[in-house]
Length: 460
Image (tube, rainbow, N blue to C red; front, side, top):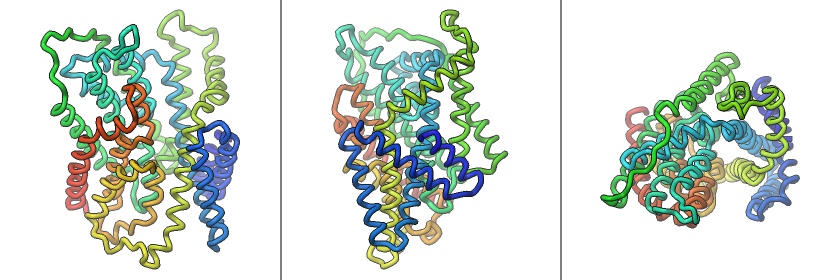
């Protein structure tokens, strides 16, 4: 069902048949009903809320079916994009070169460790999404844990985890493989990844600089007699990761030129093919003689079947949350749209600068009350006035949204990144979101707001 959903989404874009997106959405909803009994009640609650909203739309609105159909397509898109990215994470899990690269980054000297892990977290996130936190976090935990399971230096562990997490959230400002860009470009009319990527790259540097500054100011002093950590690998360990990233970017660029499809759909089609090719290379050219297999083609087939039959099942909780976030956000925004036309919730009189600051600061606040960024953006987007009416460039509105998304991802105790960091740090998600990242959020909102306002003055 999930593979058919992804194929239908790509076909719908390729042949210009929106009805295929609705069929993909129905497949996604069918999948949710199949796995609902196996996920926590907190996930089932999202399904119940979505069904109640759909029933209300069908009963109270003459165009209710069209609203539900659009919500089904939105949910299918989010889950299809996640499936495509998960194939890359699966391929990376068996790559010795990726592990060597992670060990090299995790064992740098204290003076270089934060920047190395932040940059490494950024690069790994382009390939693994939040799986980068799982991989690098596990390596950091291994390096910082005694034989009896105790953390040797909790302050150092915290700084390393923060570097990895902040490296991840900085990708949300520009990466074509990030949900922030994939969802944001569908919500902000007139925006595009190509138009925003230049601003987004600089914004990523700004977010990273805020994280580095907070770490530099608040890091504890290092004991004078502390032994230097053992270091593994050389700078050459990073080359395979950079090669993989370059290959993905080239393939996506070629796909866009050949097909003319939106970048999100090209990514959805290209990334699984790159993942299969990566697994084939791993088996055709093993790192050690012991890793050699009788038939590389047979091993690739086995890995594909294992991914479909086993690995996808481990993501069912995330897929329920992501699908329903897209569905509820799209339907909720459409149901609230009449409030705008009747001026009960009219934001057209709000100054453009207030909208930009509201996106940067508002999304992290909504994250604290349980609204996943996909849900928040999908609901808020339709309520915003057209960027032209505010005197703003759609791409700058998109950048402001990604900045707010980044800080929400770093601080909301309901996001996967915060939950993973809390797991490795052996603290609560609230501790990670508000205590460890509190100053990062406050300073980031100030600097991020100033940055997007400066962009609005410069870029229109």
